[in-house]
Amino acid sequence: MEEELRDAKGRTEKEYLATYKPGNYERPSLTADIAVFAQEKESLRLLLIRRGGHPCLGRWALPGGFANKNERVEETAARELEEETGLTGLKLGPVGFFSAPNRDPRTWVVSHTFTAVIPPERVGEIQAGDDAADARWFTLSVQKEGEEARIGFEAPGAAFTVRLTVERTRLAPALESVRVQVLENGGLAFDHGEMIGRALCCLGLL
Image (tube, rainbow, N blue to C red):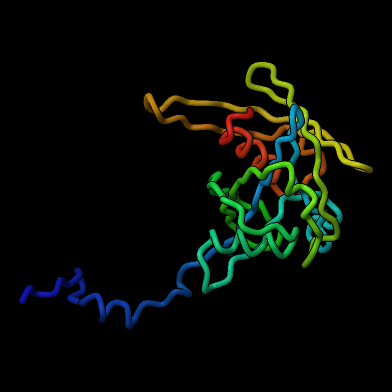
């Protein structure tokens, strides 16, 4: 029988875990946010919800929310999307993690952001729910000049612009790093302008 490994203090893994104190290390909360796009002929649309509570009360945001302890973050994304917009059964692709300090005024929060593209016939399925005061499709217009881009958002009774830069670094022939920096947030909640920019890059639309 192979001898069980011991650490520098002579402890087995079982002994180490018995004395481990999770409270010694501050842990972030985990959320999922979802950028859902719809392509209709020449028009690109993005689904946003209006926040019904603090923080960022009344601002437009991506659907999303906090992960439960008993679920994977992919399951969080699907659950929150259904609760806030009524959409179900979407294939969600990863956009990336967003972990800038103080990105959420409540506490230390890390978001895993996802994206999806739905067919035009599903656009009419949305219905605001949970803590979303409203849910609307915004038509996007993208103008690029060098590394800078302007994204216009327009829906009935709402219009704003997000301005950002996109910096690409080639790490390997098939691997590229993309850095999005928001210059003008347009009144979006949290760092959702950066999330939307990264999602558009993932889909090859920016």
